[in-house]
Length: 342
Image: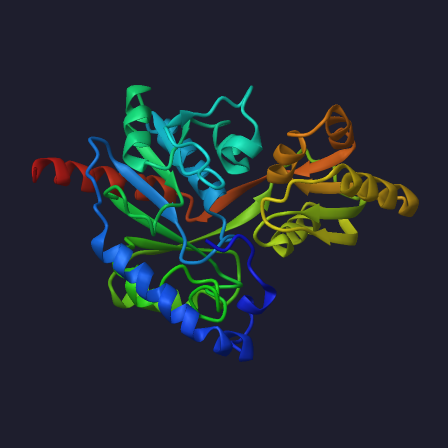
């Protein structure tokens, strides 16, 4: 898996995509074979997969969190199933947010664990069984759409409405994890996040197939304290530009931007440089919740650094706000039909 998305992936296909097209074709063929030959083990609990078509940055994690919050309001006991960053755990591991570190379980699982139990596992079926042993009666997969190692009762595809699927090429020539024609038959619905026309092609494909299309947007939560402040904003996520827009929506004035690789772990000299630059320019520091989790992985100096950073948290606003309940309801209905059908 490519860990970092080159900028040319998100522009009109050019000579770089053309040069890499033989490798993209080979990758697409392998991805298609994996999808067609996947075992899809059936689990004795409803499984809701929140996935995307491309590498990183679509907004899966806040969507998964919103679904878990709604599930709890419906009287369910949701649990998250994640591979973690790099799939470091060979056996299923129940995330302990008080003691686990992002380097070991991933930054996203630590954020998810604030809302429901999280199991990190390479073996999705084994991870699902551990969640059920812990009393979870709705399993939400954060990513894993292409792995298809367990049966999904509902697969929600999250697409960034601005970037869409980039240049439309599969890796390494573009951001797609498999060709659209190979992925879309396994999707039950599409959620376009944000504003823009980048997702229009996916929306049309879903509509032609009679699949629901939903919309949502990320919004900043109150309490970051960035409103009215001049800021140096930094982020190591799939789409830093999305975070910079969030800071501005929260009322911050971004004077300087620093973008790092997705899932970046900050070295001491990088944090020192950020702090010194902000101090020299009279700016406040602002970053994401994911970055904050990774910074906390470090030394006492890292924790002290974070005390002077505005962490801008987000949630997901659906249009209409009944969308999460509808998705969960459809997941449960499909699961019941699956059980009745044997």
